[in-house]
Image 1 (cartoon, rainbow, N blue to C red):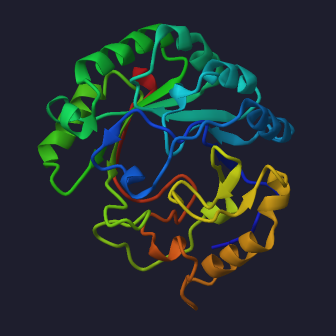
Image 2: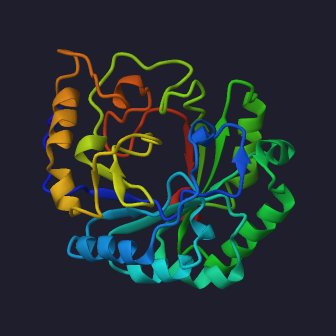
Amino acid sequence: MNYATPDFPQRVEIELVSDCNLKCTYCPRHFVNDLAGYMKFELFEKIINELSSRPQTILVLHRRGESMLHSRFSDMLNLVAGKFKEVQMATNATMLSEDKFEAIVNGLNFLSFSLDTPHSFNKTRIPANYEKVEKKILAFLDYNKGRVKTQASMVKTESTPDADCELFMQIWKNRVDRVRIYEAHSGDGNFGSLKNPRTPRKPCVMPIYDMLIYDDGRTARCNHDWDSDGMGDLNINTIHEVWHNEKYKELRRQHSNVGQCAITDAICSKCDSWYPEIGNQGTGEVLEKKESSR
């Protein structure tokens, strides 16, 4: 594997909100205290201004919370509209409403709905109601008319029967462009850990591909870095400066030498959700709608 570091991250995740209006039973939020932050619009503008000179960037506008809770959600989408190769977001869809539809279609290329089967939803995604959320999603899909690529996703836990996964696929396969079943992770409090660890360990591409920015401007390793001392601070430095700092260099050194020496990084050493290649973690199930049927 050529573990070369590009001059700038190819994908940047910006956490608009760390607060959430749900308490999903399998969410790693249970292991993190006081997640209730909202990114200041001025900080968001600063980040987008730096990124704007790099239109090939893939932008992700969520992480540990529900982005649609932000009072300036539509303004944020309008700010990024048309500036980047791709803008993605995931939502629990409880805050999805008609007044946000236009900004979503103008600002996003990909929107994922985090759901569950109808008979499990109200028990796992507390206190959301399946019928109300489904109605909101169907209204958006009708408005969207295929302009934003959409996904329905659910989490498969130890207790999830295969029949539930099949039911979920059947319900959503003709409604959205992509259906994904995620394997539950971090159940033991170690972020990114899986029930069945993956071996042999391979270098993860995230340290040379992705940067996560928390709502307060601190940067983190990737989407599985839920609660750490971070990798830098964009209130002090630029994305480019953080990307090339000594902490990142050491993290990349550890990953590039997997097989020769152990990874000792506090987060990565306990993670099973590493990516051996860009865009492919190698876990879960994905059903992609064929282009001819769209």
